[in-house]
Image (cartoon, rainbow, N blue to C red; front, side):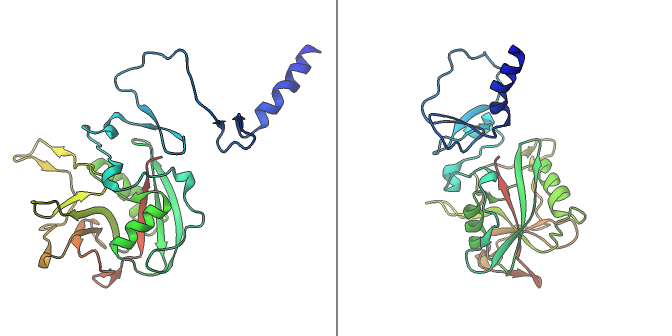
Length: 259
C-alpha cells in the first residue's frame, strides 16, 4: 500500500512539463522566482563551459572563448545586442524590415558549438542592412563563419543542394566593413570573432572562403559580404545597399542562434 501512495505522490511531478518555485506560471522546465544558492559545487576542469544569465535570468552555457581572448571571441557589445535562444524566435517569422515577409525553411544544430542555424526565404530581395535588422528581430544574427570547419558544416547542411532548403540565390552573411577613428575601413565579423589562422602556410593565412581577388572594395563602396551563386559558393563583397547580384536576388538568409 505504501508503494501505491508514493506512486501517486510522485506522478504529478513526472507528468508536469514545467515546475515553478515561488511562481504559479513557470516559463521554463524549472523556473525559480528568486535567488539561487548552491551550497556545494564540484571542482570541475579547466575546459569546462561556463554558465551565464541574460537580462531575463535565463541560464545558458557558454564556452570560455566567448569571454574574449579565445578562438571564438564572440562579443555582444560589438554585435550591438544580446542574441536570444532559438526557442524564442518568432513563429512564423512574419514581416521583414524594408518590406516583404519571411518564411522559415528549417533549422539545424551543429554539435561542435551547439549553435542553431535557421534558413529563411524572403518574399522580396533584401539589402544587407535590412537583413541584419531582420536577424536581430528574430533574436539571432546573420551567420558568421570564422573557421573552415564551421563554413564547411554550414555549406554541407544548410547551403548545398540536397539539404532541403534550396539556398541557390545570393545569401548575405555577417561580415561587414567597419570604420574606426583614425583607421581605414576594415571588414569584420559582426560578432567580433576572428578568422582562425592557418599557420602551416608561409605567410600564415586566415581560413576564409573569398573568391579570388576578393574582397576588393570595388569603387570604394563595397563593404557587405554575401555567398556567391553557383560553383563552390565562395564569398564576395558588395555595397550593402544592393538587393541583387549577377541577376540573382538577395532573398535567402541564414540566421545563427547561440543556443
